Length: 68
Image (cartoon, rainbow, N blue to C red; front, side):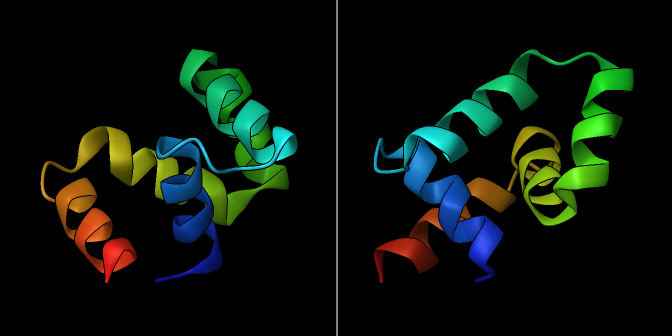
């Protein structure tokens, strides 16, 4: 699990700090142009978020690894 994936899990479980909570919330609201801008500054977090939103098996597998 990458650090970005761990942050994504923290966010999903309400355990993230205010910065990463705001970042993932913003990614969820951003349009394509602004999401690309966020990805330029936070590429690993953006990739984890993209996979969370688009890959059906990603979140269950990640959640299992995070809980272990």
